[in-house]
Image (cartoon, rainbow, N blue to C red; front, top):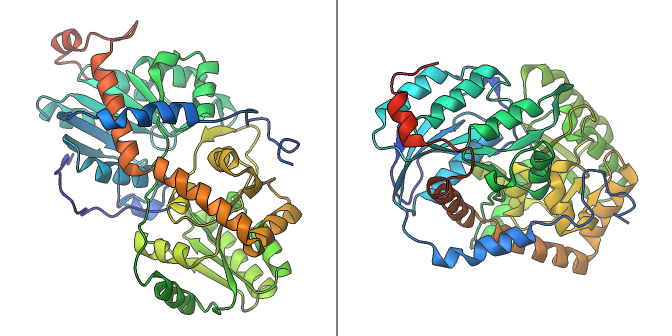
Length: 445
């Protein structure tokens, strides 16, 4: 297995992907209180945790450590790979030596990962980027986690927390992850609350928000946006509504396409690639709806979006929409949206449908989050964003502030604080790492 050392340098030679948390197989070689969903606490906020963490960043000390990162990574197209890329890029100015152990979810070779770790001398800590789609729910994975703990302290980022998965209770699995991990990182308070309900110790859980790539103002950006619009066939006098991500039914693209025809002088762009080979008919259906309902006011971009292309589309848009369908009640999961954080960095108005993924936006600007599958509510908020200048400016100001607060630079330093805690703190029930290393040098799965 190839272990890649990430040198500290200013430029990045690894391209990120920009879609949501699904793989692309070829890449694995390839009013609101009344409508408040049950999963949204009345007074949800990450503000307290963020304030405490950010206040300490000014006292950030040099931290020279050797870290192994086990994660999906580009060229794999997945949200986890995107996350790992941006995090590693933000680590570059810091005093860390990162050894990358890339995995793909169709063939995670635990033995090869362990062999690579054994070849890495004086390793301080292992950071595992976890997703249920990547690492199977099995005793084999738990044994692998235990093997990691024999080699170094372990920090695990749980990008998604489920109670049930495909109708099966998986609390036992989450508890085992916690038992074999020194620190668990999650991205929101409701993710932490779910883990606490499942019996996991609060001392093991840290909240670190999902990072945001904050883009600076670029001279000539307006002319670039006009060029992008022209390339998409969008008249300059029309408003551009953008929805992007993997092209699959759960994203609610069809519902959005039923709303836009009722709006005057609005052009809709849907961009991304199909999540799997099975979504080919769905993509054909989107095109057919666009041809019949939005003639001359619709463009479907059906391919993987490189980072630069997505940024150009977002910069050219007037509003970015995430019209997701409701979560399956038998498979409710708690996470935050990487797509949302890509949009936050553009400092554009964002409209979303009610879904646990968008709890940050609902907490920040509740008026921009509407009930799923409610065409009237979606149409109303889109009209307001595009016609009410003061509301739009207020929304953009709040979005910009939150983007700065969750910048990858700040998130990287919060990760270093988590690494410090894992290395310096021994909580009840934690392993004596050095002693176990000596007793288990020949142990294998």
